[in-house]
Length: 293
Ligand SMILES: Cc1cc2nc3c(=O)[nH]c(=O)nc-3n(C[C@H](O)[C@H](O)[C@H](O)COP(=O)(O)OP(=O)(O)OC[C@H]3O[C@@H](n4cnc5c(N)ncnc54)[C@H](O)[C@@H]3O)c2cc1C
Image (tube, rainbow, N blue to C red; front, side, top):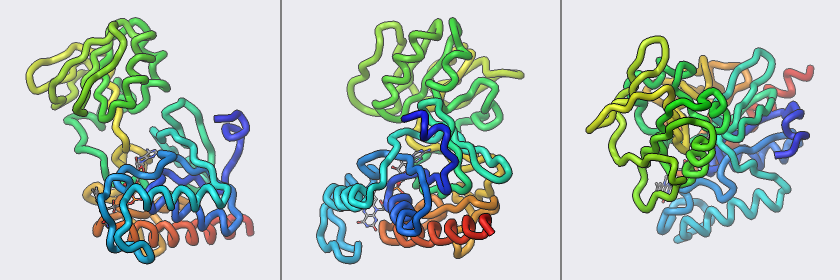
């Protein structure tokens, strides 16, 4: 990511590159708003893995991979870039939002559109209460706090192996708990533990990670998921049963924060997600225009 992006105040930051986020992005572009679009550069896994899609208007019997390629081609042709990082936290700052990324960058935008889908797992026991007191969602950002210490990394996908290797250069001991199938390829300094995390325990700070078959004494627990539950992603956001509460304009309880797609509720469908992305973008445009008056 260039320094310029780091310094910019964007009109909107869009989190997620599934049909909801991409649809929001192209509508923001049409309305000439500056944006940063954050997520997987190949669109969402949930689009890519569908064997055949029959209910997306105009694309009868299309393979999910082909639909994803069409989405990305459309975005490319409109000159929209994707920042292929993960947002680890988004902080409401009053008149704007500050987003921390998995690359430990801070991005600022006057409004945000949350289109993160619903792939997050259930939080571990005490995960939320230890956030900032030993629980972190970003190894790159918080590794320096654990110099010479003992940490556990719970990894949802293979791509977190790079984060673990980075952590092993800083921390004293790194336990790596992969939640995915297949070979684990990490530095020989890392202890790979195949077990199921259950709870995080401690006093003022994290002390123990409880797994199904053992307990680990640790100073920190890094939980690296593809997506983070919305209440943890954005402090103060109103969430009901893990869905972000929105009205028909896709407005949340926070001024300038909009949400769309699976993250706001069922049915889980591509065309519903894309339609809501469109509504969220138009509502964000109205919000930004009002700010400028
Ligand atoms: C196997 C399968 C087949 C399906 N088939 C159909 C079908 O035929 N027809 C149909 O209508 N629907 C189908 N669906 C449902 C459809 O996939 C979803 O409804 C749709 O993808 C939701 O779009 P979305 O943009 O809301 O979320 P998603 O597609 O889930 O996209 C969200 C994106 O945001 C990213 N993200 C999350 N958190 C962050 C973060 N913090 N920072 C950066 N990026 C983040 C995620 O990694 C993901 O890439 C299918 C789903 C599956 C799993």
